Amino acid sequence: MSAQLTILRAGPSMTLQDMGRPGHLALGLSRGGAADRLALAEGAALLGQPADTLALEMAALGGEFQASQDTRIALTGAPMRVTIDGDAVVWNASHCLPASARLSIGAAMSGCYGYLHVGGGFASDPFLGARSAHLSAGIGALLQDGEVLAIGTDKGRETNRVIDVEDRFQGGEVRLTPSFQTHLFGKTELDRLQLEPLHRAARANRMGLALTPHGGGYHIEGGRNVVSEIVLPGDIQVTGDGTPFVLMVECQTTGGYPRIGTVLPCDLPRVAQAPAGAEFRFRFVDLNEAVELERAEAKRRAELGKHCRPLIRDPRLMRDLLSYNLIGGMIAGNEDI
Amino acid sequence: MTQSSPAFPMIRTGGVDGLLVSFGDKLSEPANRAALAFRAAVEAEGWEGVEETSSTLVSCFVRFDPLHLAHDVLRSKVDTLLKRRNWFDAALPEGRRFWRIPTVYGSDLAPQLAQAATAAGMSEAEAETSLSNARVRVQALGFSPGQPYLGELPEAWDIPRQSQLTDRVSKGALVVAIRQFVLFGVSAPTGWQHVGQTAINLFQPEADEPILLRPGDEVQFIATDAASLNNMRSDPNGGATYETLK
Image 1 (tube, rainbow over the protein chains, first blue to last red):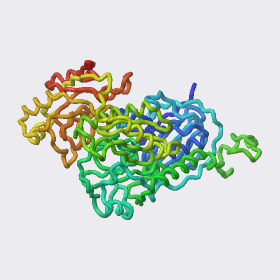
Image 2: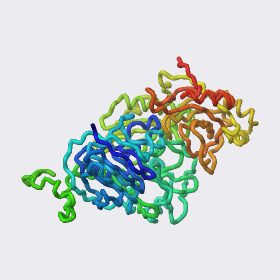
Image 3: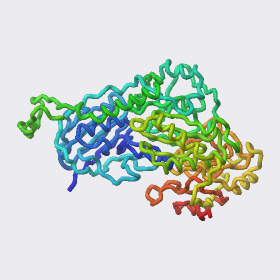
Image 4: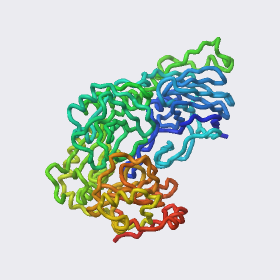
């Protein structure tokens, strides 16, 4: 019988997510998928599986879980307090979750979206090429207390690995390229966008997040009667009252509000993970530079495995020391791990 | 606009991986047909590195992989294709259908009919007659899955969007502004005025064809009463029927 993970207690906003469903803009369906795609890739690297393996996304607060058999897990994204049967374990790392042990994940200490990955991934039927929930489109649902999630076949063995990640959990510099309507904004407003700090407002979800500008709402010279046009995740839309919103993975696919710029895909995790009040500094980069930044990020993501290393644990604190095969896994030293 | 102004077609980039070919800066029949036809042509070209295309009211959008298809290479391909013909003359897509969608106008189901009628200079009864007689076309899908923008309504309906958003209209809401309808596929906030209510499910994830309407389809929102609409709610299509256009 294949493994299952039971949700003993679900946080308020937990869904299953993969890399989403690109390719359906023509139907009016945005890509969706993990709010922080880098975190999804980091968890997959820790467990040695494909980056778009289905994982559990937890917004702000985790939950309590129990596996039906020994299961490899990894924890990535916004660091959350986590214990296995009461013992604290390391975030950004892979672990063995023994059968029937209680995995307890608390509130995010920084950032917004935490991820629980399992070896083999969560199993479910695909819809339009992906398994992720897209609540604003009516695909999938929030996970509930008592729900039992099927786990796919795990081909890997390794646990106790940790991945070094860049701190992207408190705002910071975010790079932009022009959007379709950037030219409708005057130089004054484009300069202001790059000079003034903008803070993440309280309103935020997987569709978008509001920004609070210090110098009041943004003014549009070209007027507001813009024909409805394609919207992309990362677009910064300026609504009627001048409030900028960064549109996220579950955004609408078209919109009539002008967009002042578009966040580079490689910087979108930093935006998604910014907690309320976090400060952003926006900066336009030219298109060639943007392409090179994306190229560098694609290479880095393909090599995430190289950023994983063994998790050094203090043997005196390891209750389960005797369960380890202490002389297995010898390596010659020249393997690509 | 019946002819292309010198600025159009216009090519713009959006984000690092998007290219937009626009055939106008406001909605017109020729620009809409050009957008639909140009998108079909880009699809037929099958350029390597193009990841998806879609059409909006007046534009064709191309999303591509800039790591494998350089911006200037794609732009020159698009330029060449644009010069192949006058896209404003393009015919409508094949296989179009004519839909009749039962709709309750006004009442507490669609509370903004009165104010929209005033804006259009009509009585409520005149507004209902005008809107239910209009035969409009799906010009684009967007915002949420399967959600159509439809036009073009008689000139009296060139009324602005509201400056303040309505917090939420219900799924199936028929809203009007700028000589267009939008038929909502989900419950959402909007700046358009809620004049009618339907029972249609535009997006049916479990169905073989999850999306009901297609760009080019024609639609008439036939007036019905609240009790009849309520009976139609058991039908996923909300009582909507169609015939194929020849």
